[in-house]
Image (tube, rainbow, N blue to C red; front, side, top):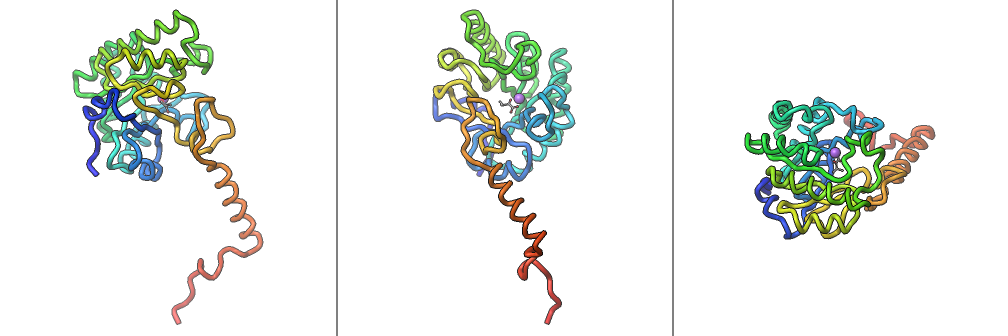
Length: 266
Ligand code: KIV
Ligand code: NA
């Protein structure tokens, strides 16, 4: 199976919905890859993998290490890597230095960065220099301290206008897709209809051009997940049950059994 390309993703506007999931490790990437169009190495790995309280402490080193693992574990999907907080906001030049390092060290085809109108110049700077960019507007978790929490966005007319113009600015700057997170559904519908590039929703609307979820959330790894997560599995229970069985068998010496030990050749 040949790997999809960024232009092929960009052409999917209004077509068959784009399937995107986050991935952080090679083995998980192998399992997700055949079913997805895009794999996102999200800075959500801060919470999901590293147990951090937010995405703010995530570093370029972390994104490069996990990004390379996901590229090694995939053959088909476009892999995009989140630019972590502090690695791209200061200037287009800073963003280019960070993003080019991510591309070189991981082999990924694209980066993703949060922000609206204020980041449009940076998106254009990168795209015109060979770095495909996915935008991310609406609820932008790196801005949690400005927003005051992770609640849904776009409840006021003023906020709706701002998010819509943010999406338009990032698309006009050359982003080939935009993640739209945590906005009321009618606003997501409007942005999907008005903006030229594919809009990938998370906590947005079924009418978006695609959907993304955090893999550990949809697999049921956590007790508490946001409303917009649908659990397609119950991995936490499966893992607990497996580990409980193992612990019991170790303690009772039922493990290792005949099949799990080496015997001298007869
Ligand atoms: O970091 C992440 O996982 C993301 C997705 C939720 C879009 O940005
Ligand atoms: Na992210």
